[in-house]
Length: 415
Ligand SMILES: NC(=O)c1ccc[n+]([C@@H]2O[C@H](COP(=O)([O-])OP(=O)(O)OC[C@H]3O[C@@H](n4cnc5c(N)ncnc54)[C@H](O)[C@@H]3O)[C@@H](O)[C@H]2O)c1
Image 1 (cartoon, rainbow, N blue to C red):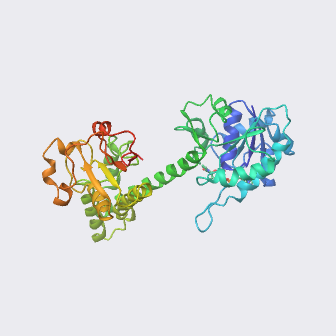
Image 2: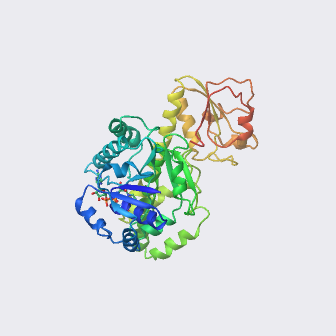
Image 3: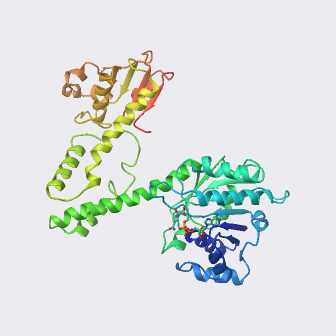
């Protein structure tokens, strides 16, 4: 394929190298004339393993050039936009280069020969969710004089490469995520990545924008968590590396998908108690631990969020059935259950609340309940019961089957 690349920085040049190695033809453009001159002479502007050699070979084979004008870009099958989105002092991302590039690409679309199928414009720059819809597409639409779908389509493909092993990451990604404006519009990308052995997932533009931040924030969180534990280990005379090696040996709960499911807050007799004890211990040991300190506030913030979601759906004094009370499925333990906390707050706020939990019904668990809670726990529910809202707090398939399917449901166990 003929591929245009707008922005020949780290991401653009590695993408160029990957595509050249797969036999494609690349036409580059960059607003920095010095970068263009370097590429025109067959060199890579950056040091990155293997990239220089591939750029040089692509150039000498005539498959890598710098665009002389927009008409060369206009005739490409696919264009990648890899311009920078640097951070501003207040933390927001500067989208000005991205908008300038969108303007240029929109102008190129106007020059596209009518007989060619739509060009696919693939944005790779990191941008917060909603930026494609609010900043990029309106700029493109104005410059191209038409909405996507006829002469051009748009996609957002977040870039996950790491400098220093960027080309290796290009050819062996964990997965390729493609955000589409409407299903199927980015089909050409699947052909382009046919040689790459990785799952290709298509999703909405916003999900594709957000996954990049979820990934990067989690990576940063891992570094800082390991360092908080390391600081405590060092000050306790414990081997920090040994501690983290032991931690990483648990691939069942620590390094796995366990717990990585948005739903209810955590609770139960151990987690909150132990996290608080660790935070306190670090404080008295004089060790700064902002992550550990903020786990409980984050958990409380989540219950606040769930309450606000309930309030958004149903006015005060409505009849609500909360399905689930113990702190997780298959136990009747209600100690420090976030669902008991939720129930108390809904009652205090004036909702007409009842609770059903088959784990409590099946045992004597009800005996553990505080009197205010015992009063609202039902022994059974029936299909003809009427509720303004059913809130599913934990997995209770048999209970949910019993409910009238016309009643509105909010599942907070699985957001
Ligand atoms: N560097 C990385 O490891 C990495 C990894 C993943 C994602 N990203 C993201 O990818 C994007 C690009 O990052 P980068 O490190 O390659 O940036 P970079 O600063 O190295 O390169 C950007 C290039 O775009 C050019 N440019 C700017 N405006 C232009 C325009 N209007 N038209 C043409 N060219 C223009 C610049 O001259 C520069 O050469 C950023 O959003 C970044 O956050 C970077």
